[in-house]
Length: 80
Image (tube, rainbow, N blue to C red; front, side, top):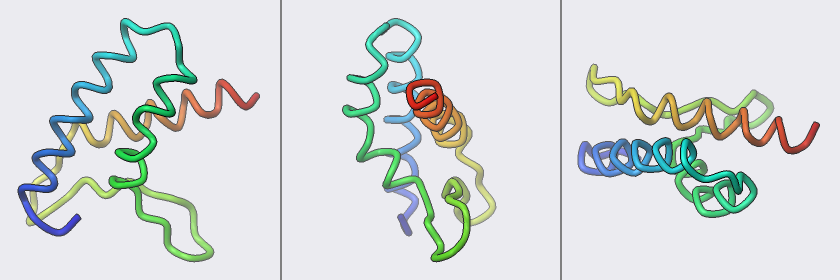
């Protein structure tokens, strides 16, 4: 993501995903549904841990941060 429009859309989608997670007990389905968004907001430098891409021009997109954290938490819960 390199444009403000991309970050605004991802932030809004992240907000909706967080709301949906609160009311949907099927976490496997939720992970599948939002896998594309997770990949879109993640940076995967070779040989380094994955991080969230949530800043553009000094603006931090908080729903993207929260979504990324929740997604990783749900992944961890289901694999352990």
